[in-house]
Structure formats: structure tokens, C-alpha cells
Amino acid sequence: MASNIENKPSSDNEKPNLWQRLKKLFNPDPKTTEDMVAIVEAASENEVIDEDAQRMIAGALEFSVMHTRDIMIPRTQMNVLRADESLQENLKKIIETSHSRYPVVGENIDEVLGILLVKDLLPLLYSYDSKSQLLTDTDQSQKIIIDLLRPVVLVPESKRLNILLKQFREDRNHMALVIDEYGTLSGLVTIEDVLEEIVGEIEDEHDPTVDTQIRQISQSNFMVQALTPISTFNDFFHTNFSDEEFDTIGGIISNLFGRLPKRNETINTNNLTFHVTHADNRRLYSVRVTLESDSESTKPDPE
Image (cartoon, rainbow, N blue to C red; front, side, top):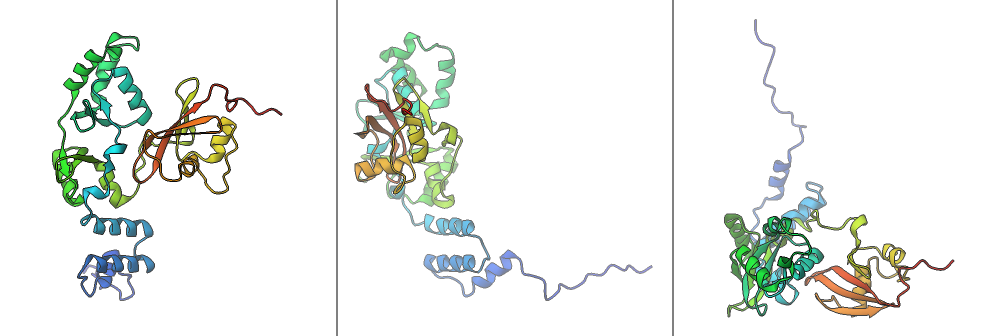
């Protein structure tokens, strides 16, 4: 019996797939990166790709011509640990900044001894309680930290990001220190910084949620995320910052400074001291808020 199954030719009305539509857009062949960006923008306007895909493709196209200096965190804004400080003091910095790895320096920031992975500290901390002399003894702490250090990876400011990403992947490394043409420390860069140039901001498990935007760390000190809405901040501290011009407390703080503040800068207002704990050359991330001794901020407003 003859089979009734036939291989029917494709219908002329069948819609072309994404690749076929992109091939049509890529005719004639682009000659420069600018040509490719224009084609991608046209593809987005014609709804061949969505806006997220457009941003990622455009980011990937610009990625190969960018250099490490374009995205690095400057040396003045680096979060570092000091080998000559106790474990207790360094743990306080780790808790405040919530990174997974830190450069460890000696007498000054130019003397980088190595990279400390926080996870390497965990087995040690599990063995000792908070009152242990190990945590407060500077000499013992220095020996322990140095024994845990991993080698420093150095990259020049001029290294292109596509090459840097390949190096990160091949070496299975997540952080590098950046040096200028004279071998002087300029800053640091992480694999997350590199990837964000393609895919945009990467939110991880340590990024704040509504419930963790304000965290009390002592009787009069609070860690506050810069993205905390002004209304949330006002409700918590019983302050009256205006939300007409800015939406977040980070906007208020930047306005008080008159610019984007740097790490470790401090400013006082409304019986509150704002100490910048985490910021880079692009944005403000978190501050430590200290209540002055005579502050009424945390007390309920009188009815």
C-alpha cells in the first residue's frame, strides 16, 4: 500500500525564523562596529529582537573596544583588608561590605600581599568563638591571613575587556589588580564588572531586598543600602527628608555632597552621620548611619 505521507514543500506564507530575518537585515554586509550597532537598532525597532537583546548585542559589540581602565574600581575606592589589623577588625569590614574576596595590603595600599577569599576563613572561624584571643591578637591574625592568601593577578589598564574575560575564564580567576604603565596600582576589576558590560547590572544574593535595606549593627549604628526609598528611611529613622527631587536615600546623600561621594567620606545632617562604606566611580552602594548621642531620630514622633 502506498504511503499517504508526503513531504510537502514549505508554504510561501510560512513566516521566516529569527535567523532568516536577521540575515535580511545584515544585507549588505556591515563594515564597521557602528554599522552593526545601527543594524541591531533597526532590528529592535522592527521588533525582530526585543530591547534586552538589543542592549546585550550592543554591549557585546562595544565590549571588544573597551579597556580595563574603563570599568575598573579606582584604588582610592577599593575595599581592602590590612594584614597588620586583627581578624576581628577585618571581619567587621567584611560584614559591612559583603564581598567574597579582598586584596590584603601591608603598610600601604601599594603593598598588596595577596587575595583573601572569605570562604577560606570560614573553617577557621568555626573553630573559635568571638572572645578568642586569636581574633584580637594582631600578630596571630597576620600570620593566619598571610597563610590563607592566594596569588595576585596583575593586568595593565590597557588590556581589552574581551581578552581580560578570556583570561579570567582560562585561569578560573575572578579578580585582578590593575596597574598603569609604570607598574603602579591603579585599581581592581572583577569578572562581574566585565560581564556587566554585556548583560547589564547583575543582582546577586547579597543585593538588598526590602527587608534588608536597613540593618542595625550596634545600638547607634545602621548599615543602609543607597537604594533604600526615602519613605522607608524616613519611617525607620523618623526623619523628614523630601522625596520630591530624589527617590532614594543615596540620591539625598549625593546631593548633600554635591557629587558622587567616595568610600570613607563622611557628612552630618539631621543629627545623623552618613559614612560611605561602599561606592565606586559609577554609583553609591551603601552607607553606615550613626545616630548622635542626643538624637531623637529613632524615637516615635509625638502624637
